[in-house]
Image (tube, rainbow, N blue to C red; front, side):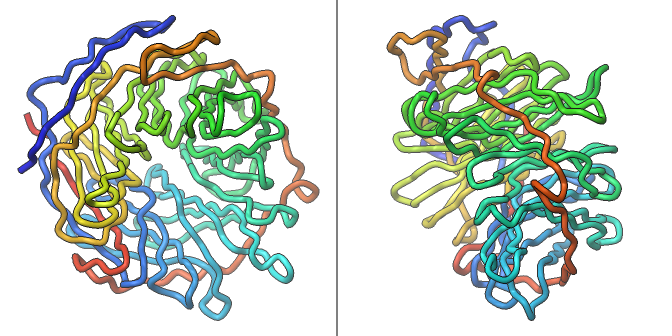
Length: 461
């Protein structure tokens, strides 16, 4: 039973916003904890993302519990049973592999992350990997490595979106830039590789999603940048890139932020014309809505007494689910999950955790369930009513000092962002490598040193 409910809805003026939505909690719908489990091997296991394949949950992340001392990427599939496989370099030559995101299309899971692939003097250099997993056959059917030897500790994929023809991947590139890679969904061959650069600072692209239109694919990339033209510390950025099947074209780019660290961690289209973003804004969890043309619609922040972040979003056509974690001094960190309707109204909120660090990294949503995955060191955990205020964000399009919190400055940065096509063989390489795939025997519901958790909440009326 959840207790100690304190969700305060505070409406503030929203400057030059396209529209306002009343900030009330929708009545009659609630999340109820239905099931929970943990799994791992005793030496540290982290879930980074979760997606749905029919009635089954697909979880990816990385583990320190198996292999020869390094980190191994894993995929796990859970329905009435649980199966997990690790994949990476052979045990005789242990390296680190970390999976950060997964996208499902048809019967395939597309998994992205980083692999310590380079040899010789570059032994600690990381490259991007894109893996294709056949969910029916339960085997790896494609594995592509993208990198460049002059990029130490740099090349990592953090996000993926997949369709019938293309796979879109984004992340960190060349020490201080981000990238968009477009791969053939069938063969995993690289169709195009683009570098995104905002100048002298650093960029991290953590999120990607797309929709289609009459001219092709409309791709939204988001992340964080500390380029000096910003508002202080790291700022969030968004960019729209159109792909017509042969050429990518930058349509617009914008940044927004405060004087504190800000960033976009997740993007989900909620219609053909609008998309939602999740992340952090001034130390608060953040959910914002934008149009496909870069127009700001509305935003809200979760103000706890300490810091919070939204790490993942999911959309089922009716509701948006958001998951993340907040600093809870008595429990270190606790996970929290929000359910939001199509008008941006808060439906319900729940916390999840025990006496140690509990963080939600991924969320998936079907018609009647919210599925969440992350890391925990306790089992079972409690669900509870988190104490926070759900505030409208004041958007400032000029340079005057904000008078209401939370707030965010915003700026058009289209003229600062360069989108450069890279040349295979001289600016990036594509490699293949033998990847060992091994089924693993797991310890369930007895976490040690951090295990994966999967929790299911039903949405009841």
